[in-house]
Image 1 (tube, one colour):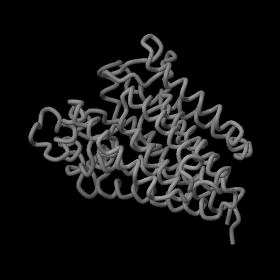
Image 2: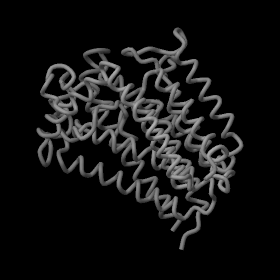
Image 3: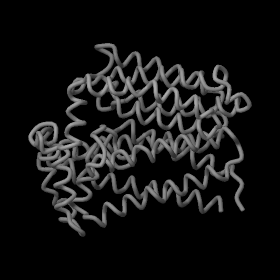
Image 4: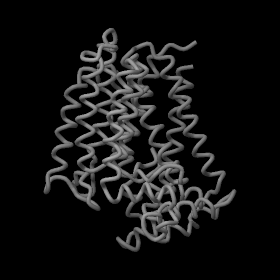
Length: 364
């Protein structure tokens, strides 16, 4: 049972990564040639990150995941320091008004990805140590929420509201499963609503995204352009698609075709059957992840697996929902498939940790 579960999880992740390699080249080759005179520009960088991710993932799989407990706090502090450093001009790299990356020649690193994993590890460790007082507001609820709040403020400063919301939902679900009083969670949720409203409607581009989500045709050449072109891509693919490499929307119509909207290109080239296959693979991933969580006897491993599965699943749901026009544009990549160095590496590391945890569970 353990062996089959690990094989299944590895196979699903491997297939999604392979689909990503193919679709990144298909979606980015023309854009890469036009901008860099190298149609393999993004593919080569993606393969570099894939190699780095494989090395780190193999390392994670060779050590006992329980050792992460002793590094939970230091890792969180390191990630917080990096989140501060990336905001400093001259250190962090600014792209389109957002300062989210460190740049090292051809390698870029997004510290918010490390912060998400570090916070999940910290919360899992906290719950495993403080389970008996988890219902207490000061000792069981406030510390992880303060850690979440600090991470959220620094990520919002980049600015990156999508990652902040995703991280907040994951941590709250972890605390809910741990037995935190619903009244505590609900009170923080109520307090956060006006803050979220202010963050969305006080910033012009976020407000335009919401208006475009409600009715993209109000501004078809502006804020609604991405959503409209994404839906055109999905609709023109039909049942079987236009064929691999034959997307029309990637010809400078759909922005971020190889990153945030790669699911739309999959729909255009591989059709409804292709998009359903991707959705089914993620459903299988969630099912295998839940199986690992269910059979994990170690409390730290249980909540660590829960957090990692929730984060990957939530990002996939948001990305697919945005591509289909069911959710406002958030800017979150599709796990394992979208082009993006840091996100791919940490998605692969998450799989390595899950495989590690799966090997310690008890199965019938």
